Length: 463
Image (cartoon, rainbow, N blue to C red):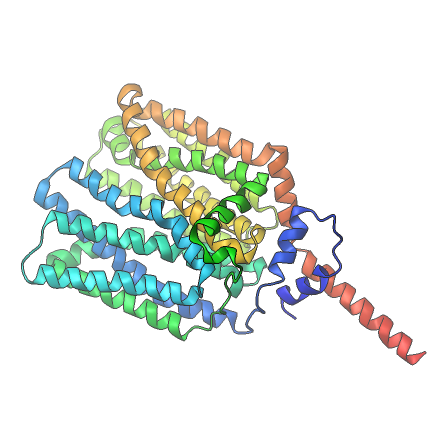
């Protein structure tokens, strides 16, 4: 019997005085039955997404390299980064509304197809000799539009496909895919740009998107969406997403703290090369050592989390991760110029620690939000993540000019650590963590009750 079926039997006996945890569990009972072949479905989807994400990052970094070669301007690179982030940040709430209103399988296919068609058209334009910086900026913005619809749909689909006890593992698997793309994408993209030309990188991106569409089309994804009258009106549906988040004060407080932590960390990430150059008198080779240490150890951390599963106290794990990451930043800021090797070691430690942040955090949302409103809430959190980056970059770039890079590492580390402490100690968040932890046991409890009732009925029939 599936987890959702077991929840369904319990939902009917819940009293009118329900806790928020009970309401969330009852809402999940409405979700369709899990497929017995859910692992095969996940692998099928993951293979297609691997093609799409890797080729997307390759074409993105090929575009970055073109802007670098053509303009040699930090301002233009900053504008390119904004083009790749702002549409996703602004449109993700609408993407969440669409994910809840329509069949999520078709939303995913449409988003991948849109990005693929745009890459194909851009490649054809460049092939005809009309390449320009403006074209690259448009390409970055259009890819970001596709992600604004794709990410909320994908994150809200996972709870329909995966037993909730495995959500952390699956989120970690998806996170590792993005991390590998971040490591391989720049090298692969710039190599292809140099070896076969910009237009061929875009054609390869179109092929990767086609593979993603094909694999999603063949995967058995349940048609689950919000059929209420409210969902038919985009403005009302968006308000309902805000209301769902606002009604759960624990999630609302968590979202505010997480946004502050993400903003500080997004800003500090952009300063690692400058820290290497300024504090340790390093060169490009030393900077690449730091990036490699972070990339490799983050994959190690994700591997540990995938095998372990994160346990039951997910928000506590997120809190420990935030606190530990902040301490590492403080220690890095205290290093003297002759301690570069310790900077590499600390960066590697931070890669492991940070791997325990995103996967469990996403699972908290997936376990807490009713499935018919999952897309809208995921869209809001995608906006939080996307907009925290430019805010953090602006804050870090401005403040580091006055405080110095090393001192800003210390300041940012203190803020991140305080955020971790708040996530783990605020009463409302400790209550939320306990309620999430309780959902791990409910299916087993229900099953035992069903077995007891079955045994009683057999005894009665014999009598």
